[in-house]
Image 1 (cartoon, rainbow, N blue to C red):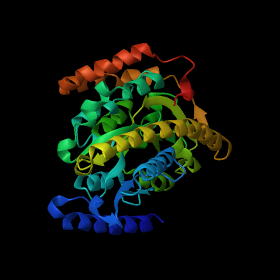
Image 2 (image 1 turned 45 degrees about the vertical axis):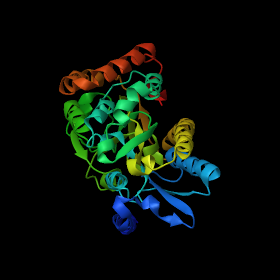
Image 3 (image 1 turned 90 degrees about the vertical axis):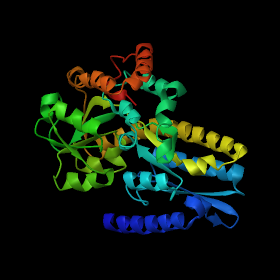
Image 4 (image 1 turned 90 degrees about the horizontal axis):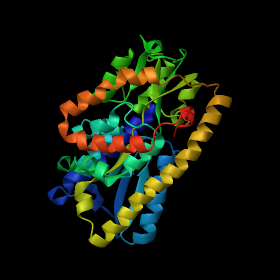
Length: 354
């Protein structure tokens, strides 16, 4: 199945790239018409029951309801257009118009995104949401990739990232020692894993299940939905709420496509981007509860709630190092700290963190 998906992705990516190169003056694939309508292609790596996909379908319905005489929106789930890295590159060139990318991948395109990858950057889910809803915090980061040909149009809640393992319960940092843990493909995540004593194993998300099943890796780190939507809970039997990161996924759009929209159409698209954010967040809350119930009662996953302070103490020196390396990020970092003071972590929050 995985090989078939890869073949489809390569074939479709090739066709899309050919269409892009054949366009006049680098015009994106969105210039293709379906009758009198412009085709808009959106790719992501989640299953069709995932909140991200549900939110993008709401976007499709909204745009076609308001502008259906002009646009035909097509949503491609489950890495049908390739890995997230592939899709970012396709969006960059204009072969597709939008894709959902992890913040960690975008770190490789702009150093500004490194900030959101810091472990223990946000004190609570309330601080996380408030900061991500503040344009003064997000705009300098979202607009930092325009020279690369794309920009962020909204953020998507991806919950709290935690460690989960095949057979070793993680109740303290020392439990990670010697374990090969899949992390997202970013320098920040590799450094975090190294500091915590594990062996970082960067790989694409689509490869994780097979790597866990074949014991190439001992575990991974992600939110609860990875256990159920992606089947990781069939292999990994311990999920530990160390709560090391709250990293958003990002919906990015090709700049040429966005800049080519009329003022009226762009306003409707902006409303659609806001809809993606609100629908996904509503669906996320429900999906996490359902995932925990299924993982515990059907997959046999044990949820652990360790003291997070030892993990945090090991990782927080990364904050000072980052600000020293990228001083322009200091005002944004300080803005986040203001929200952390306003919304501190609650003692009872623990695994209920979204």
